[in-house]
Image 1 (cartoon, rainbow, N blue to C red):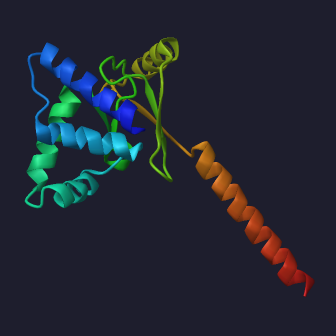
Image 2 (spheres, rainbow, N blue to C red):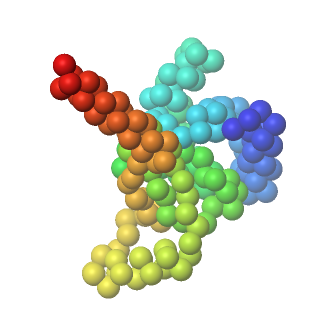
Length: 166
């Protein structure tokens, strides 16, 4: 996220918290900022490493408490499948859509298709299950990782052809 839009997102998050009677403390704000900078799902210990560069005394509970707050406020999502966190794309209007997670790079896309979500939840319930959380995650490979994989496969294939021709 670019500087101006990131600052606007942080200001929006602060106002949202204030409206809820809560405070986006400097630590919470910094964790949210780090997630905004990342642009993808980030593990808590990676956030901790980044926090320690800014605040050398940061400990795991500091980051986890900030993440717990951001989760409860609906500002971030926990990506269970890769045990990481990402900023909610709608920031203060989180609709709990369907999260598509790239298993290669951690990029997360939120799909806001209420009818699709309702149909999926209905099928799950018809099968006798109850969702453990509001989040629905699908695992996949993003377009950039698919392209990189295809390029690597093509390069390997042409290298094999050159070797076979010798």
